[in-house]
Amino acid sequence: MTDSQALVKTLDFQLNIQSDNEGLLYDATLEARRVYNETIRLAKDGVDWDVIPDRVADDANLVKNTTQRVVAKALGAMENYYEYDDFGQPSHTKDGAYPLRANYKEGYNLSLTDDGDVAFRISAKPYKHVKGVLEGSNAHLDILKTALTSDEWKIGTAEALFHNDNAELHVNVTNTEQAVRDKHDSRTLVGVDVNEDNVALTALSEDGVEDTLIIDFPEIKFERHRYFTMRKRVQNAGKDSIYETLEGREERFVRDRLHKVSRHIVEWSQHFETPCIVFEDLKEMRDSIDYGTRMNRRLHHLPFRALQFYTSYKASFEGIPTGWINPEYTSQRCPMCGHTERVNRNKKRFKCKDCEHQDHSDRGASVNIAVKGVKKLDWNVPALNSLPVARKVRRQASGAVDVPTVTHPTVRGYQADGRMGVSD
Image (cartoon, rainbow, N blue to C red; front, side, top):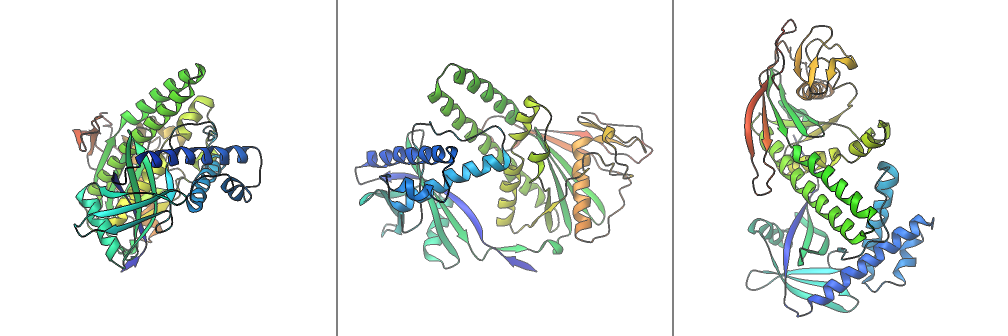
């Protein structure tokens, strides 16, 4: 059985502007920044959010559709702040360029040329257009050309922006007929435990645990702390422009690493028979976190949901379904005997106070996530008398390398009466 569901993919292109008015596009991104700042300012001042779009649009020197999209993104940032984040309230004093957001055939248009290129026309200002052709990877160009000619694809919102002084266009396309296998037809559940510096994966079938992999990405935690320290210093020095630059660099670094880790999760899952990837539902996690100011800042800013979203997104394009389970006690429960107690876990080491089973704590959590996924699908939970060696890989910090660079066994699970423990 398969389900048809709409899947969205973002395609990135460079703009080869041929209308000799690249400055017009940059001026429009500055105006978009002003619109964004004004929206945030009005929201902070308590103005009714339903009134803000029309109030901002009256003074904006942008196409109306573009103004509406920028305002919507700014209000979305405020909504996320109030719902999820106690620290990162959006700023209304930023300067520099801000992406122009526009709907297809309203704020921008695309067409195929006789030479096989994709031409663009962006309405940078009212009645003023920027024209040229898109340049980028063959894979993304092929998808976009298919979307322009196929009824199974729809072209949606795009953002025109400047990255390292280069003009780019990021286009969202939707495949309305993409087939994703029904999760009930799966034969393997892949439990995914997302942590501050790693992600633990366990593949569970009716025969038991097939394999476990722990992917370390310590550079994300390190870089986020480094950028936080630098931003704190420049903020105290009153250098707001440098603060915003550092914030953008951190965001791009983390997003790049998360995309690469999520790709590796999906590729590993494909090694097993008809997999289904299972995550903890962490929507309410932020509201329950209160461990003091310093620890709260670290945990609130961890990219748990982002990594889950990127993984689910990539898995869907491979036809792999995803599921969600209640995260309660997954890190405290012994996967062997089921005994649940907080003191079972001590950082990365797990030792059951009842049966004395020892394990890598994150691997144990991923096993429990997979087991909960099995129960949710009404399968019979296989006997877990022993667990195989858990392999660990560490991603190289360089963005140019997209494969793990170190692989070694890190832990072996034993029967409940075992005494051997973790080696990591």
